[in-house]
Length: 149
Image 1 (cartoon, rainbow, N blue to C red):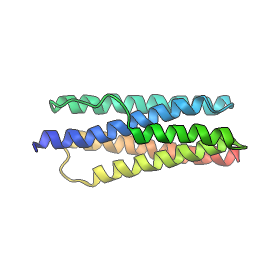
Image 2 (cartoon, rainbow, N blue to C red):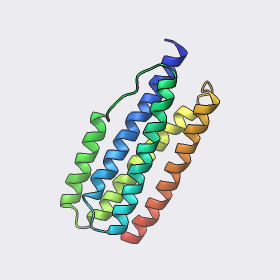
Image 3 (spheres, rainbow, N blue to C red):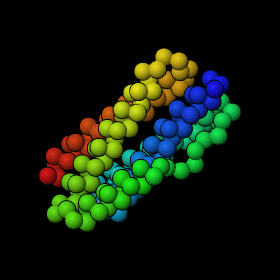
Image 4 (cartoon, rainbow, N blue to C red):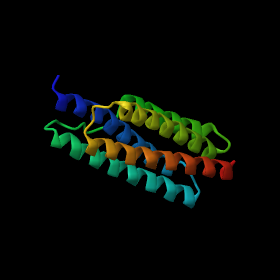
């Protein structure tokens, strides 16, 4: 496998995760009543959309084809969030918990890729920027969760 193809495959995995996260946040907006949470989820969805654009650009620069949709696993997670919110007495807290789980999984994916030392500096810095934003989102979500519970 060519180096450019190998890097693009790894970036495509992150791209799919970002599609999943964006869709998850958009789904969460429909399942909460709080205007503050709606705006928060809308900002997170927008941020993940921007991450996806940046990753697509990098993949294209390597002459490879970016993925164009999320994963089956992501769809299942969103369906679980919807189902859980339907049966939960405090659905906003449950949705925040699921959002945190999803972000922590994304953070692990980013950390794994960043650990690899064969990435070009431009991609490495992009991944660190995304990782830091995801970590900040996790911290904010945990604060929101404490306020909701």
